[in-house]
Image 1: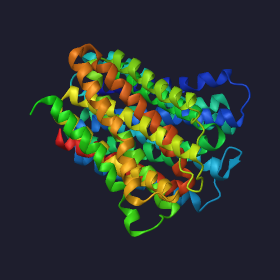
Image 2: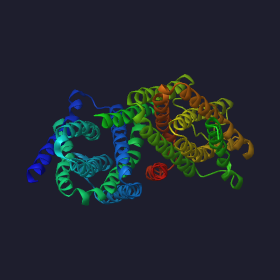
Image 3: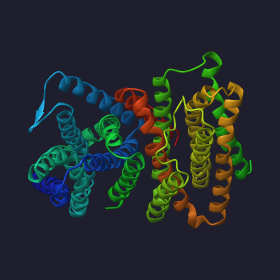
Length: 243
Length: 243
């Protein structure tokens, strides 16, 4: 059993590292204009909305009520976090104010979402480790756009590409850490899973609607932002369903 | 009942529900701008929920077709906005009484409900009870949407009854497209994932290009995000409980 658990942990770490690849596209991005911030927000918003669609689909599969309760708690979590952050003059690197709040929130939200995903991975591994490699590969690929979402918010606000990769990996670390206990105690975790998935989805959707989209609309033309969000959203759902 | 009659009946209910959007204006001459914003946000959230349930239901019928259809749907909405010169149009100008603006608003609303008609038709073709739920969700969504339209129309000194009538009239394209989509998919079942995908792409694009951008100027970001996330959660939850 411990051997299998170690395998799950090792595979999980690989999937966390893959998240760092999401920062790679930003190596090729030179100037950071208001239009780039708008596009990055739109892409991050589409990716997060798409990811939440996947989480909700999985959560309601385990229980609709539990997913709903989880989602409402996720929204409350963001509201409370914003209140707490609002009381302090927070800094993220050299950035302060509203931008710093968005940066802290995205790292926090994506990290929380990895907790839920880690449990989902562990529970699905519980069926037997034969498919372990395939599942790991799938999750690793699935994590890359999540790193892209984080980097899209951090990079235009002056965080280095390397640090973007670092924060992306950091946000995924709960995934392997949670997958092991979930794998060992499948039954106990299975009942908590829909709450966790709903929580992550509620927090992500709310953050996109409150923080990312309004800023994007302020900095670029409406149809451009809309197309970027819509295409990314649909692409993300298909990507995470089929890879 | 004959399936086509079911489609006719429920898409007519959906279009007719728009009459309720005029309700608030029986009691008050005008609504505070923040309430118009919440009406937009509620309509946006329900529409995002409708896109989610249609996407999840459509994917098993063919991911490739859904993906291609979604891109076509996004392109359709974007191109019709561009070609009609309404892509940067503020759809909630309550003080603009020029005839040209009136026609543009009615035109945009009619096109908007055409895409919703495709959603109802495709959902009915997937499964009649599912399609019925979709039609009822769109019906409820049509109410706040009609309230926004009635706010613009009554601001132009159109009577409440005529405004509510025009709101229903702009939704008639919904009935037409629901039946046409249902008939086409019935005759050529291979088009089902394309039709579902088209509706998903169009609905998301309408939310991102028409409903959300206005709303952020009408009420605070936090209240807009809250209304939208709750409206979306309600549609998703009810569908997964009833399924």
